[in-house]
Image 1 (tube, one colour):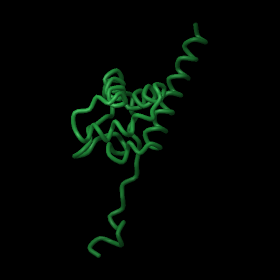
Image 2: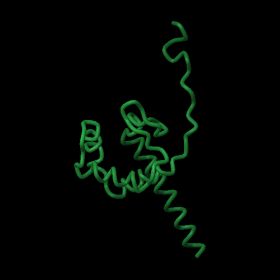
Image 3: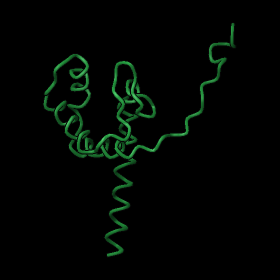
Image 4: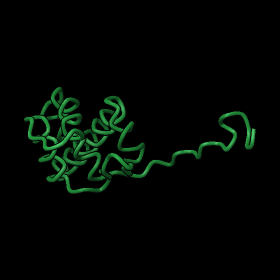
Amino acid sequence: MLLFLLSSFISADALYNRGEYLYFAKACSSCHGPSAEGSSSAPKLANKSQKHLEKKLHDFKNGKVFNSNQEMMSQFVRVFSDKDIKAISVFLSQHKKKNLPDVADDILGGVGS
């Protein structure tokens, strides 16, 4: 029993890590943000239901789209395997907010320059 629980924990952690890798490697963060917080043109994904996320990603993969934003998502998701969709859904549904450093005020050469 203990071995089963331990293997379940390791596999869940591996799925989360794979999902995190895919989220950044496939540029999901470009629109949805580094913490999956969403933007003016892309919805928040962090801590949404895993089942809901999986359904939406499968819908996009299967071409079930109703607007240009969803069409763009469909193009990204078509290359995902079912395992990729599961991993990304696990990562987003259990998203642990990253401790990201703040962008310095002088990123473009100094405040007021």
